[in-house]
Image 1 (cartoon, rainbow over the protein chains, first blue to last red):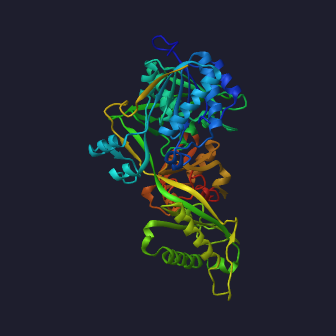
Image 2: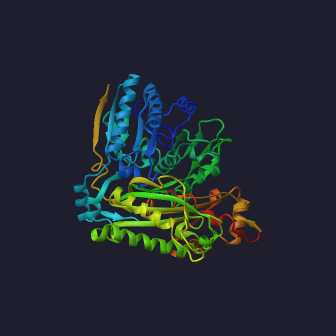
Image 3: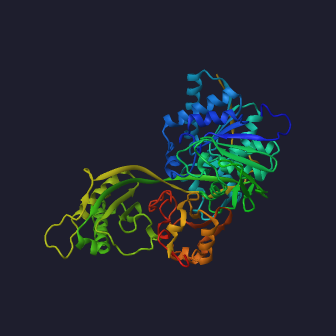
Length: 465
Length: 104
């Protein structure tokens, strides 16, 4: 901390946005800078966009929107000479994501003529290291978890570890003023500095949990925006930076519900937040004071793993059905159609592929397209349905071949009520099929027990000039 | 009888990571929250029956400091898996909207 000597009375924190790339009002950032924060934080990632960004190496937000947010935060932090902590670069925080974010940061520095010591902390895990820890029994499943074996590690496109606050602090100790990381805990970006400056862990981690989503904890969120928190010995105060936004005790309390399975206990690498005793009070009509939040240190330090593997390539056909006769027997009509598709695939490919080599699935919108097996309403009550015929196989060519067979079979699948050739599917597009490219799945929901919080996260120090 | 949708200020669902989904039913004030609590309608059995899963797969929380109920269940398919139909689990709360709350 450049301006902190000994323990601080309060630590002021500016969260740029909930995600770097989702945006914030420039005026909000300026308003926050006027309150003299000790540092700016922002995470750039999430598993929310699904397994694709982690598997493919791409980002969920466009490069231009990420660069806009990064530029404004970097300029503000350099001007005020305070640290900028950027967690989970490029959605997933793997090697290609960090490389792209680093390139963007260097571009901005060059365009703006900025110089600063940078630390880049990597989070993509070496496969041999993971196999060694797996053999030692130091990779443990969370609930629910897919099976995790040596084969899972080999098949993974990439596996990242979610770093805690320790690597951030180490980078700052070694002189970095901007820290860009691979996958990190969103909260760790914000909790490390206040805890080290003497703010109790319960207060600092709860503040971090509120900050990491930017302005998501306001009463009526208009758009993604910045958020400000001030941590003191026995409470923290939180306030939005757009004067039209309000934090209320209920809006801040209810944020602990968002995207968590358990609203009272939130697990981090070094312990668990306990929000069951938290008190929320209004300071005025837009600021909230939070106190009595707890933190239980963990017996054992753990690092959460996230990984993705390629499932195959996918091709889909979208179409609709309106004929009441077909709709009255939709299930049996589709079942016969599907059986004919598999038969035709066998005619084309012979023994060169089996049913295990591809997955064919029909989604029925209008029945259970949204909820699948969780749908409580079983009867079809609509006058039309949308079908998505979906083929997934080891090559795009094979997936497309199956999808085009499927289109043709479903299109002309007969029903007893009509004699003669029918056309039972209204195809939306020509060509009717859409190639979706590679598709991925999450393959890990486990934690790893390292010797220390640093061994999985090598730090690269650079002078940006 | 009022419905949960009429009484709540927000009913929503979302991923809690790629493997679990969570449903929040939030009320604007203590009075409405207590009324729903008193009705006893929101319990683990109801959540399990609605989603056709077993009761021991349901976690249910009463969150008094923000007048909210919260339920978490394992996803039927992991987020983004081939058969998954709602990548963010954002539309899985729908069956609760029109449920009637006795005593309201």
